[in-house]
Image (cartoon, rainbow over all chains, first blue to last red; front, side, top):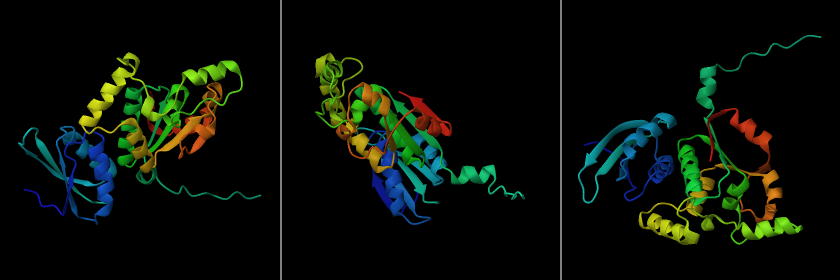
Length: 81
Length: 176
C-alpha cells in the first residue's frame, strides 16, 4: 500500500488520455507530493514509467487490483521537478 | 582587430538537460485513422514534455480546415477539386472499410462508446498542450485552400525549409 496525496481517476480512458491527464494533474501538485493514477488500460504499466523517465518525475510504484470487468492499475508518481 | 574569445557556455550534457527533445510529424494523409495515430503520438509526446511540431500537407490539410469550407480558387480545375475535397476534422474518411461513410460512422460510434477521443477532440488537446502546427503553403495553393478557411490556432504557414529546420534537431521525425 503506497501513500498518496491525491488521486486521478482515468478509468475507462485509453492511451494517450491517462498520460495527458497525468501531465496536466501533476502541475497542480507541490514538489514531493505523490499522485495516484487509477487506470484500467494495461498500457499504463509501461507508459507511466516511460513518462516518468522522460519528464523527470519519480515512479514510486505500481499496484494491480482485480476488479470487474477489468484489472485496475494504480500508478504512483512523485512530483520531482 | 582583435577577436573576442567566446566561452563555450554549456556542456553537451547541460544542453540536453535544458533543451527538450523535439518531435516532428508530417501529416500527409487526410484519413481519420492516420490522423488519429498522428495526434495520439503528438499529444503523448507533448505530455512527456517534448516540443512537438506538426506539419500538415496535401490531404492532411483537411484535418485543419474549417468544416464545410470550400475552395477559393478561381480556375475551374481547382474549383472542381475543392468541391470534391471537403475539409473538417469531423468528416475524415477511414483509410479502409470506409464504405461511402458508413465505416467511419461505425468507427466513431465504437470510439465514443469506449471513451476514446475523436480526431476533433485530439486536435483540441494537441492545441491545449502547445503542439506547434504548420500548414504547408505549396499544397494550400495547389488544392485551392485559402488560409482563412483553416481553423484558428495554426501557428505558421510555411514550407520545406521550416520543416527541415525543425526536423534536423528532431529526436523523432514521423511521416504519416
